[in-house]
Image 1 (tube, rainbow, N blue to C red):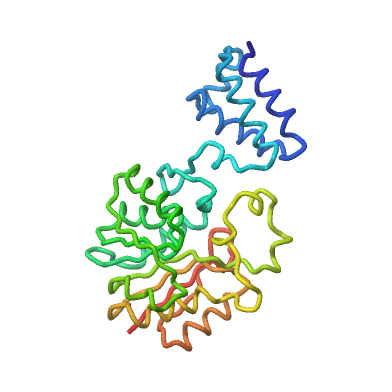
Image 2: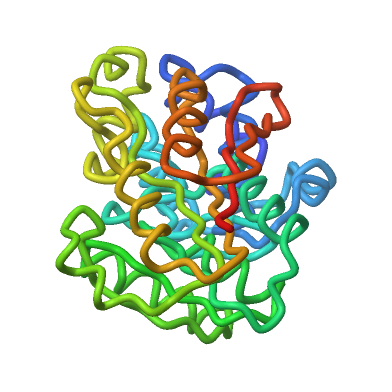
Length: 283
């Protein structure tokens, strides 16, 4: 039977060829919280505490999967987002910190009380559920994937939020009739160009759904253009659109939104200083 210090060393030895030391420490802490219900402080204060054979086996199984670059969120089946826990699997993207900033931008910029908010490409439902919890709006979550919507529905129940779900392909304009009139559109659509694939981490390419990530180099603004056109048809007066964007296309997106008649088109930087979000309004 190993103690926590010995288990940590074994964990490090298994993963040191794949992750750097800081990443391994963080992965160990996340795993310990999940398996042992111990915080980082608990681990430091109880390093000689023995670990049961069952929990040792669970640790080693997790480390084996981590050694194959599988994301810890998929292994544990959950991810943190905006102060909540979300169930995730390989049908949905892992929620990321930048997207928390998108939620915050939407929440702070617009008075969402009694307004209809549409989250397009909802995936795990993290945006829709976070906005439902932090506003008094009606929230509708849309995705082309029924598997993703199943995950999002579980998360709505898990976080005790009332969300309306619609399965629709936003690129098929005949399906726009499924959607209600709306005050706010928020979306983190696929925006990584195929030419950028070589720069992506292997754990993303191997495990996260490509349908939620990539667009063709020949039409990198495909989803943005269709969503903006949807907004022209479905947004109520004084409605707004909020996007998470690929920084390399920020100029083109401003031009696209402006050419389509949107007002107050602006790029907002993320906490790392990148052009990460676009906000615009309709008259």
